[in-house]
Image (cartoon, rainbow, N blue to C red; front, side, top):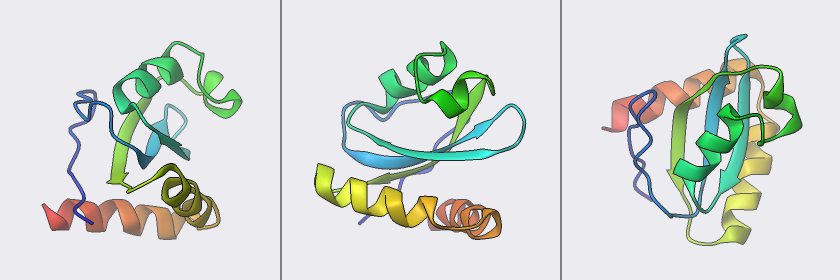
Length: 99
């Protein structure tokens, strides 16, 4: 599946199911899934997203991977959540190399 490079602070992914990683203000990485990345990023930055990101704002999008279905997105999200920080950073770096 094709991955798209994302410019920080400029969400433009529209309404597509996929998984993402945001980098929080404290440098931590938070993965999730959504069917509307633009709305999800706004929610995270307004404190309406995940409890984890509420106290770590602002967040910026650093990784996006489209998925074929909600089920596929949930499975991929779990895989990413199970990765350690180094593995997540490697995944983010590889996305940049694909573009």
